[in-house]
Length: 401
Image (cartoon, rainbow, N blue to C red; front, side, top):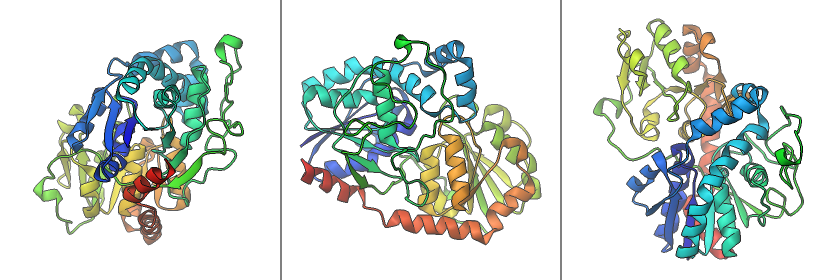
C-alpha cells in the first residue's frame, strides 16, 4: 500500500506524523511525507519526503488577517478565536499547497492519504484521487473540526475521512457533537464572499460530512518526536535537585520567551536546577543564577525522564511529550490552541497555568513539590501508555482498506 502523509510546513505539525509513518514503513508499506519549510527536518527520521509548501509565508498571511479583522486577531491572541482565525490562516496555507500536493498525488498514486488537521490539501488530494483520507489529530483539539472548517473556508466539500486518529488522552479531551470548539468568538459575516458555501460556524457539524459522525475514531498513542540529535551528557542523568526544563516555541513570535525570562528572574529562589532550551540571545547573554544553565536545541522527549517538571508555551508537541513522560508542567496560556491546552492540563491536575507576569518562586516550588500534580501527571502517563501503539493503528488502517 502507498501511503501519503501531508503536513503544513511547520515542525509542530509534521513531527507528530513521524511515529505512524515509521510504523507504516516497518509494516512494508511505501510511505511518503509531503511538507516543506522547517518541517523538511522529518527527513532526519529516515522517511522519504516530497517538498511542498515551502513558499508559504505564515507571517504575511497572519498579518493580512489581522489588518482586515483586528477584533478577530485580538481574540486569537487571547486564545479565544475559535475556528474563525485558524480556518482563515490555514485556508490560505492550503491554497498555497494545494496545487503541489494535488500534482504529487496524481504522479505518486497513493492508496491512502493521512494528513494532520490543518493540512487541508491532503483531504483535497484524497478526494481527487478517489482514495480514503485519514485525519491524524496532533493536539487537544478535534482534528476533524479543524479540517472541516479549513476546507469549508476554501470553498470545498470533500468526502468525510475514513478515520480520525485520536491522540488526546480521553481524561483531558473528549470530542462529542460539539467538537472541541465552543463559539467563543465569531465575527459578523460580511456577505457571501466572506463566507464560502458550506462554511461551518464554530462547533457546527454536518451529518456524514467532513467533521461529521461517519468516520471511525481510532485511539492512537502519541509517541513524542522532536527530531534526532545528541543529548548533552550532563542532561542524561537525573540530578540530585529537581530539574525544571524551560522551553519555547519553534515558531517565530513570543511563545514562551516571556515566561522563560520570568523563570530566570526568580530561579535563584527555587531549590531546583533550571535548563533553558534555546533561550533568546538577549536572555542568554545576561548573567544567570548558578542554578540556571542554557542549552541549544535538544530532543526534549529524551530529556524529560530526567526532569521533575517542564515550563513551556503550550505547544501540542511539548504538552503531549510531558504527559507521556508523566512530568508536571507549567503552561503559559497564549494564542491559538495554547490557552485551551493550559486550561485542560490545569483542570486535569497534571500541571499549572500561568502568565509570565504571575510566575513566582513559590509557583515554581509548587510545581516540583506538590504530590497531587505528580500523581495526576503519572495517571495521564499510564493512560497514554495504554493507548494503541502506532504499530497497532498501522495494522488497523491496513485492515480497513
